[in-house]
Length: 359
Ligand SMILES: Nc1ncnc2c1ncn2[C@@H]1O[C@H](COP(=O)(O)OP(=O)(O)OP(=O)(O)O)[C@@H](O)[C@H]1O
Ligand SMILES: [Mg+2]
Figure 1: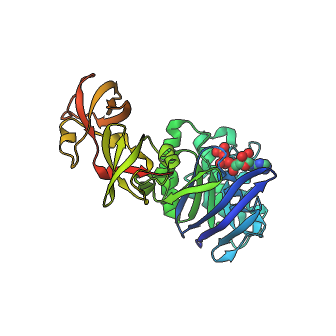
Figure 2 (figure 1 turned 135 degrees about the vertical axis):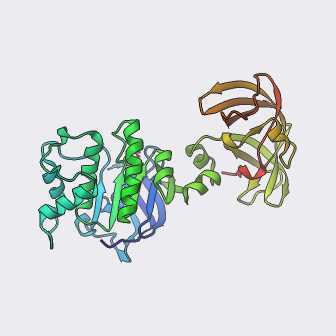
Figure 3 (figure 1 turned 90 degrees about the vertical axis):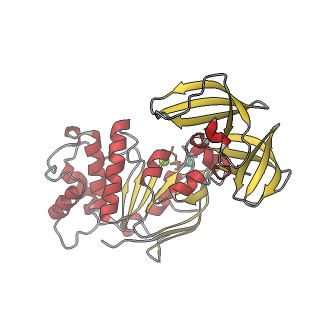
């Protein structure tokens, strides 16, 4: 199997009045697991369909393995796709479902039966040829859909929300299984999902999409820890978003006034004193009590106004001066400091774990 690199250059797609994709540019490296992540309607499926050749870009170019494939029909692109909300044909045996993928192309060296057998082995379903979909579990049906995509020995694997029809537990299980399969095969993969935890677990890199555009592109850690926009930090994980005004800049840090409260956060993009900004802090980075006393800047004193017990995690709601609400999460370990509701405690974060957002 040869593995391709993929490039999208300023790809647009308009459906009459709807601008579904607005200038997407990205490259996917050979063997990379790349995800398109975003809310419903942001253009993920449209982007994937243009890569597959089922939709034609209004403008822009798509290059696979150095070859411009923008105008190439789907069957000449040599890629495997698992479609959203559409697993396998219910009236066909597993064998015919998988062989279906081969019949629209010309069989080459190995026989159809051998290829079907090999692809079933790849997905851990050896010997399932004669079963009907109704005789398979939901997870097994998804694996057959994957076998059908793989049987053509694609250069590129395109998966559109392949786990969305499964229940939560099976989704968790299949997620690790897909990751393992992809790394074993080393096949370049573009994965579409609106589930941020799926994208984080599976991907080498993620493109976060919003309204037809890519708002941020990077590895999961970068997207989570250094979100580029309010949209990205709100979409990926939970975050405190504190509105304020920059009062001073010190190297890579900004001092931001949230009403009467001064806090610190790191600056990733140029900002000016006086500018209105949002400080983003993840709840797990908010430290309370003695731990907040050891920060390099004076943490404001807040009042604990709520506590929620979640087993492994304790979640606190804190009110800072000036009616600023803050959520903190701490691990429920035996050494943890206990904070009664209504207590007044220092509440802060290391300046590096807060991020100044300007758009
Ligand atoms: N064939 C079409 N004709 C007209 N509009 C379309 C067509 N396909 C998609 N759209 C519109 O383009 C936009 C993007 O749709 P798309 O299917 O790419 O979203 P998505 O990100 O895959 O969403 P979801 O998570 O719900 O699957 C939507 O506003 C949708 O209504
Ligand atoms: Mg979709």
